[in-house]
Image (cartoon, rainbow, N blue to C red):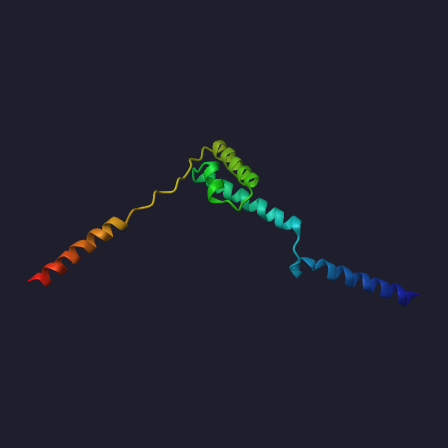
Length: 118
C-alpha cells in the first residue's frame, strides 16, 4: 500500500507541475486575448483624450480597436484630467517643408539654364 500511495502522490505532483506551465505553451486563451484588446483600447482612448482629440477622431484613426474600450479609456482620462486640473496636450501642427525645398531648387535650375545660354 505505501508504494501505491507514493506513486499516486508522485503522479499528482507531476501533473500539477505540468499543468501549471500551460500558459507557456502559446495556446491561445480567449479571455486573455479579450483582456489585452480591452486594455489596448482603453490606452488608445486615454491617449486621444490627453492629446485633445475627439472620440470620433479617435475611432477614425484606430479602426481596429474596440470602440467601447476606446470610449471607456477616453472617459476615464477625461474624469481624471478634470479631477486633477490637467490641461490637454494637443499635438503641434505638422510643419510644411516642401515649399522651402522647391524654392531652393528653382534658383539653381535657373542659374544652370543661363549658364548654358552664354
